[in-house]
Length: 618
Image (cartoon, rainbow, N blue to C red; front, side, top):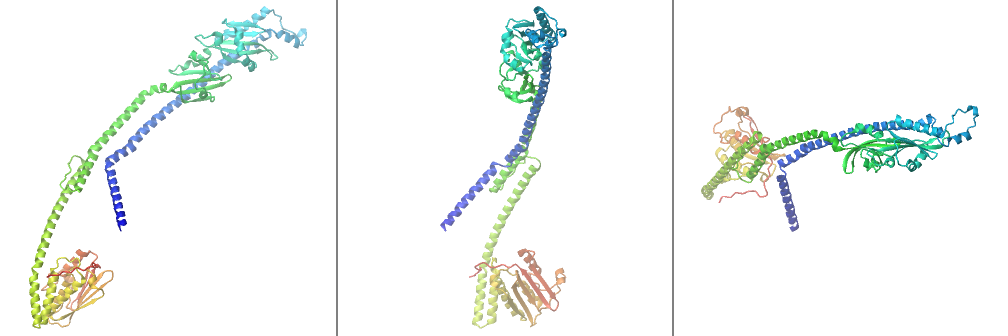
């Protein structure tokens, strides 16, 4: 038992904690906090998210379009450079077209040994060494003069160096030996190199075209070198003088082959793996701590990579005005949003919160609290209705207290009135015993019946008033009336235990009284009242007499008038049943003139409590 009580105490403590937690949670997160939270999540946050996403998409679109244009530009530049390189490579073929290769030292012996033609078929003119050298130099000068970008030309053959154009004191033979392995591997094809070693660090850059010169048997008879100025690259890049745009040409090793900044030439490009990935590529990345857009295009013969890099900030700089306008629109929008929230809080949420506080105070017992009318519209109407409700409830409380006070006074008066009949009961008991002493049995029984009726009527509370008590009341009443009329008999047919069921006081007695006083004529000896009581889910009571009867329809219309009518009529009984038990219960009346009356009750089946209430009057 103790363990069970302890468990109940623990459960009660836990329940109280949960209720307090729920109340604190509700107070902490009221309608205002929930609305602001939902508004931030469903309105402000989506707006900022959409704005950020739109800015990001716009930025990416600009970057993508700019990168695509840069890649197309690099492709066009690479094709221009390729065209110029092809032009200069084809210019070196003039040595073959003019027969200059046949004049080079060492070609005569090979021809005399291998040529088996007769003397008559030889058409070659025998020239002196000076004439041959002059012819060779003229061919090289023709290459320089016909191509303005060619600064000088060198031809190394048979231990001699033939030169044209700009002369330089640097030993060209050492420069050629530096690239000899790459040139030999090319097998007569042109190779391109930087010419820094030849001309030093000039203000403008120089480039070197080197190729082997082969005779008709594809045997190397010399090496041709053309020195070109930077216009080979600067001219195609001329149209890309965009602020902040950096242009590079990388060789196959990822070193800078051309740059506007001469100091960068020959250095390794910092993001060579990024721009040397495939033939044409563009994108955005972070290079040397700066967000940039890059684009590249590759040439495979020779292996060169044309690269352009532009900082993202330079691209987005012209759109600063649009960005500022977008930010201004967002600020204005958020300003209106917060202004709306302020107005909502001032005109709706604050009055509702104040109303909630007033209601809490009213629930705690402050019945005179009022709501200040500081809002507008429906919220103001709520405050007015609250004030009207508090006034009505306060009036009801006052009325209830007054009724309760009056009820207490009535009960006190009833108790006082209950004391007064004691003298009557005692006097009647004295008369009864005097009748017994004088052997007046009829008087004794009538007095005893009258005492029973008076004691029943004097009872104040009838919550546990039983069917048995109502039957006793009817028997006592019939005993007195029988002494008066002496013309009827009262019979009971009980199919249940009447002491186990409750009924309202004086519910049957008026029907019996009407049967006696109005149903039987004075002096008639065959009067009979039969009361049958049973149950079938309801309490059923049938009161049947063989009196004179009456017209029920006329009675209900109020046309039939009777003399000496009781104060509690059948109409009152019907109304009392409806008020006490509900519309589904009632009574049915059947009567015909000269054939008696039958009244049948339909009442709820109410059982008594364990101990039947008893009233004693001392």
